[in-house]
View 1: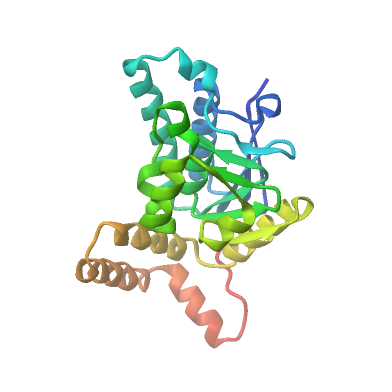
View 2: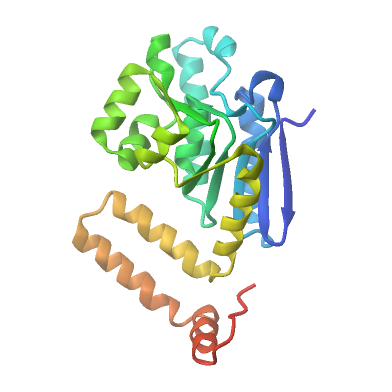
Length: 256
């Protein structure tokens, strides 16, 4: 059985974690397959945007496999943590936008995978949480690093130290998700967002994501300088020439 499914249509890639009997929880095998799938989408020239979701109607990714974690010592936990961090870094550093279509539980490692995505869209039944402290551990796949940068330190402190779960409405209120839709509409709305992005220049999108990532660890002066260099570089590309010409000629640009 494949634990990760993927499809590509009209430059839109869809990755589905397919372990519904375990609420799409991540063990070593699933992480390996998911990492391979993410790499495949990034390296596929026929993909411009990727949607990541879970199988079924209950769960996006309900965290890591607790029974497997129960048997780990610190050495095994370090290995497992690195595999999860490598996956989330791969998503976060992708030159192609990743949209998390959160269709239910996004807990622990599942929440952390969604945090690595560039945009999060949730169904009305979605639940988010970092419950690791309830188990005597802490988020190890980037939760302590990404969550504060998305929702602010005060809210991140509360969510991580209480381990509480929040619903989609609260996630939207604190800026954790961009949109909320009925479950039946989630994938269609996520695809609409993906196609909206696909109308734009792929190099411009990739460099924009790069500039945004740069801003996290830069002061404003170095960030502005980095942005300026990427901005100017694009003017020597066929993509920019096409986009500017299309605007002047009052037509749609042809980027792909």
